[in-house]
Length: 131
Image (cartoon, rainbow, N blue to C red):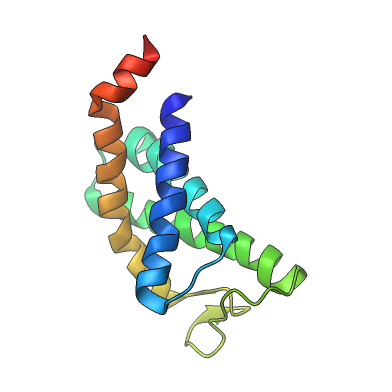
């Protein structure tokens, strides 16, 4: 449980920082999405798929991030009309909320995300919190 909180906070910090670095702005919803993604990557890519091929794990991570991004986009962009992002000008997009280009990027982003999860597994700080 404590690891999940740490992962959520890490993903909720890093993902918005990546957005700020790449496009100069972010939104609170991206912090929530980033936290959810890192927790899911830990559970699926690092645990359920442990020992499987790195390519499969990266594809799973891309699927996780793309799905979370789509769900977040439907809520914040389409329902709440917050206009946080719009991929409709990019090729191979669905409702302007996800697109192939970013799904490929998420595949590669899964590699350091899994590394972060592994670091938390080895963390002496988290081991102290368990006791």
